[in-house]
Image (cartoon, rainbow, N blue to C red; front, top):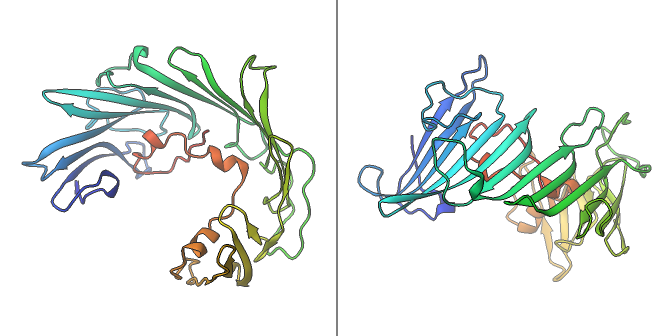
Length: 321
């Protein structure tokens, strides 16, 4: 399949990107997996090949662009190669991601020098990330420990997450709000290792408390300074004040902000949405206002983007540091 220019690759009119897909051979799946993407300057028939993205699945390294056995879910391993043509040779880098129950458990990154067609040599490994998950009732996608090592196995980063410590602050007049039994999955302590012993060395630690809606109430930074949220509007869904974008929500239209004021200029943004809750206003601040539902663990979402973004079915939602 030939596609239009990719803005991320700065393609122009007349440049081709050719995609290859394989249908999931698992019965009743109906998923399609991207196996190869080739980026050309000019047409695919007479232009210059600039980049090949080759994706292999489930430890199969043979004929990845068109594997004879197809691709079969569940996906336990994705090897995403980046092949650059350099003169008469090629230079290849790799991101290898492992999954369990559709969650990434590790991501190995290799420098240019690996070969396609076989398992990568550890000689070229530059970074490895491993992820362990918390044992929470009915919630399986919250990381408990993320460790990053270099190619020689030396620990470079280590972050631990603890959930649901203490109690939540109750809210009132929250629509469709029901009581929660079991785990909530709120990250209440996030600790980042600094140096020394992995178990006893110094760490930078943040603490969070929450409302019963799952929104952050207080944030205690690594120096002990406490930031308290000023409250929420629109059914307790959106913060009245957002420090990151200096925006104050003032009025609601249904469940969404209808008017917001920018702190720097006191400029008022009117936010309008259609019946599908899609923003129809041209205000960028309004758009940011719709994306304010954040929590500490959201910073760890997206580890496998280097390889996972080429999974065309896009049903696996990875988690990372």
